[in-house]
Image (tube, rainbow, N blue to C red; front, side):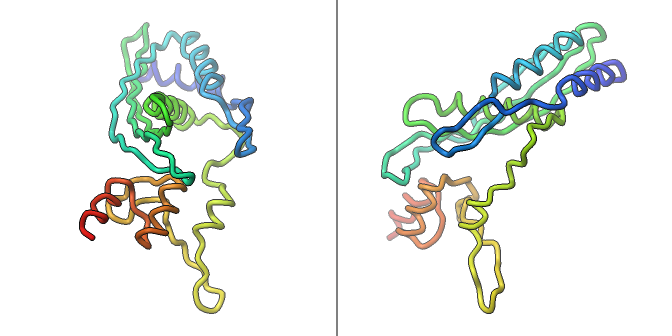
Length: 194
């Protein structure tokens, strides 16, 4: 693994930072696009004669209700990436998980795109100049005041029954209807039990 490790260090050096060129007009933020990440990582991998093989696996698919009451498809995908050194035959593997949501047939593709993008960003220690956990709006929503200025974290972004990640719309509908955060499948079960 010594030869591929040296090549990976070179890839990491060449890809240490990716500028955020994407703009989300709806939520008003900038992001590193998948195209930018893949272009930069592919150039560095090819230069080092490293081949990238990606194997996707669908972990979960479900229909979710948006805040406006529309039904959309949500998919969670795991991808395994194997990098193979064309010169030595050595290889290394890493994985990524992504979730995508779409009203049409693009949920799986969005999930794969997120999984590949973040697998490379994290595995190659690529900076985009931000922290995805630094989400002030979400933090403000999930902080619930308790007696005498004491604050506790109330995680309502996952289903309280199965732990599946929830969209804000599904979470809000569930909280109003059931008083707790439930995914669509657990909402159906809870509704059937009532």
